[in-house]
Image (cartoon, rainbow, N blue to C red; front, top):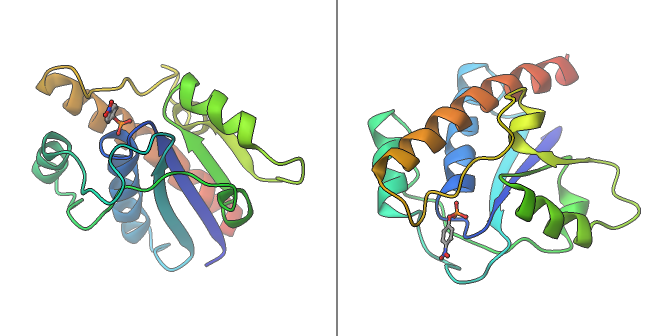
Length: 157
Ligand code: 4NP
């Protein structure tokens, strides 16, 4: 693997696993599957070891993404050695990651949407809302993953 991307949200059961599954599929379609490692993690520890939320899996599944094999974990200090991109779903996640960031980290720590060229800023936390929130997450994630794949493609040329 030449590059590695980590997506981070709060629980690692809604937003970041969606981005994880969507990016894997888009990398596969772009012929980059073997070149980029993808993972996801949460800043909170409530859901360690759990599969993505049923509502997240349902929205992803309708669009052709299988998230059933993913399991939640917490972001850790070593992640800053293992990943070139650490992409946060919202400002709160980003602040927590900035506080963990070691001085030697040379990768990109940024809001996922900003890095993917989508201007709306944050991927809103869908956990306590209705079903439309999960569709909105998927739509934002798909747009930003398209931008990210173009960028990864360019770096790997
Ligand atoms: P996520 O969503 O950060 O996108 O995985 C959440 C999942 C769980 C909780 C909050 C947000 N929670 O409070 O348990």
